[in-house]
Amino acid sequence: MRTKSLLAAAAALTLLVACGDDDDDSAGDSAEALCGELVELAGTVATIAGADVDAETTTIDDVTDALGTLEAQIDEVQNAESALSESVRSDLADAYENYVGAVADIDDESTLAEAGAAVESARTEFREAWEATLSELDCRPTQST
Figure (cartoon, rainbow, N blue to C red):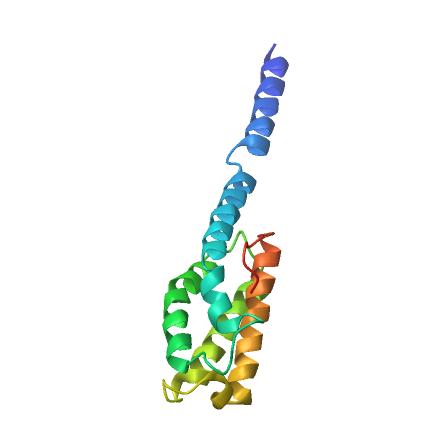
C-alpha cells in the first residue's frame, strides 16, 4: 500500500513539474504582446529607416523625433529575454544607438541626403535589425519598413 502511495505521489510530482508553471505560454504571450507593439510602430520606423524614405525631404529633426518615439520600445525589446535571442536584442540595441549617434551632431534641418554615408549606413543597419527582430517574433507588419 505504501508503494502505491509513493508511486502515486511520484506520478503527481512528475505531472506537476511537467505541467506546472507553463513558461512557454507566458513566453508566447510575451512575444505576441511585443510583436503587437512593434507592429504598431512600423509606420514610425518606415518614416526614418524604411526602404522608401525620401532622403531629400526627411530631415535629421524628423529622424531624431522618431528615434525618441522608439526609445521605450527598444528598451522593452532588451527586456524580452524569453521572446528573443540575445543576438537579436543586442543587434537592435546597437543599431539604435548607432543611428542615434550618427545623427547627434548633425544640424536638425539637414536632410538624410545631406547627412551623408555615415547616417545612411546607420539607417540601413537599424532597418535590418528591426526587420530581424520582427522576423524572430514572426511578426507581420501591415506596412513595410
